[in-house]
Amino acid sequence: MTSVATHRIGAGVDDGRPFRLGFLLHLDRDVPPARAYREAVDLFVAAEALGYDSGWVIQRHFRQGNEHVSAPLVILASIAQHTNRIRLGTGVLVLPLEDPLKVAEDAATLDEISGGRLELGVGSGPFADAWEAFGKDLTDRHRIFEGSLDRLHQVLDGAALNEVGEVLHPPGAGVRRRLWQAISSDPAQSRRAAERVASAGDGLQLSRATAWQGGTVEAAQSRQAESVDAYRSAWTDAVTPPRVQVSRAVYPHPDMAEAVRLVTPGVRRWQSWSTHGDPRGTDTVEEYLATDHALIGPSAGLADELAADPALRNVTDLLVSFVPGVPDHDEHLRLLEESARNLAPRLGWQPSSR
Image (cartoon, rainbow, N blue to C red; front, side, top):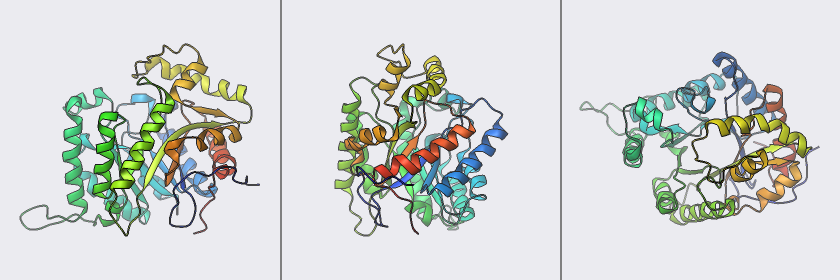
């Protein structure tokens, strides 16, 4: 039986619900790639049956972060053939390491294959080794990203691509309307970046609010709330509503001690290769979870914490991920079900009737 809402978050979406629910898939288990991709299809099929509005995959090159997802649009094309309704997102595709014209061609093709379900999220990416491999300088990533983004916008908008006037095929108008930008968490840049996203008519993507860069989780949440406000204030399209997606790490489980036990292997693995610098020197699992702002335990308590998060007040899309756990397939299915049937409904979400 679906839980009755005890809190509400969200700015409201066009079907009358307060927000849309998505999940972010990490393919970071130590299994062969082919198995990881088959499980990804199964998880999207299960999420669609549970009513999730969208599912998102990340991009990591060379198994960075233990991930198997170097080609997210290829994986989503496979998932598209096994699903009918759930929207298919990238969270995010590292645009500066790609040719924007090729991204537009692949994205428009996937959008046709999926029946107009692609949600293309792009960002600049944090992994220096990937930038080195692609022959690019990470310190110049913001300039390169902005140039690549301008080119992507032009191509999707149907600009002529050569002297004979050829344009993108298949057309990219649908992808253009469903383009998202992930912005920097640097407070010196985040407001301007949010305003830039709004002026482009793109959706705003915000990652998790953590304390890894110093300060507190609460301060990070407040900065994100300010970015959301800046984006909404700068939005000028009177026809199309703004789109705001915020990601949060959750691990709903009725037994707190068991939840800690289940995420401990993932915490230890993340601690072993983390690039965050870990300013607090977190030795215990509990310290790591607090700094990482990973919410674990019974759904009612998680809903209380999410409802108090100022960055979620004006979202249109809540994106849940199950890090730092590395759940096996059955546990991943349980987490999807618990989040859709007990956690999100406490915040006012219900599956769409459309």
